[in-house]
Length: 219
Image (cartoon, rainbow, N blue to C red; front, top):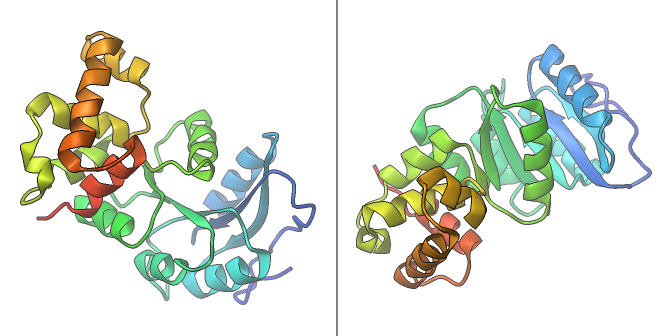
């Protein structure tokens, strides 16, 4: 299949595993991501698009599980693509070189299930795709930190400094064990902090806590 801009759309009609649509205006990046993901069991790249209109067209035709989306696209901004994909059923994982905090904030508010930067380790990217496919919200450390530092005028004001640290790590997709190791505390202490964060934010689980924090962030 061919995208409207002439970009090749690989066949991926077997429907096996996690179906990924790669959207990036640089052909080398698209081909590199397709080659990287193609060697992993349970992941198949079903299409590639070089711009926003092509991405929307292929998303409608191929119905991918995950759209791996760059924010810097010609013709149609990545945020616009995100907003247009809201009803598609696909989960969008932003993979971008645009590190401005406001861009990450806008991406999450527009419906992104994750925001990562292009310097990510390849194995970490594969894990991120699987995590987002499982329904998790996943943010790069820089994105999570900037979004949470910008939170104000919300229930997050009630969080202590340590609880904010824990919430930032939750937003990165870290487990209690990982948080305990990073903060040099016990898992029991982390569980207590997590429970306090959920109670103060008035949410039921870790994913809701992360979503609440980033979507209520203000300048």
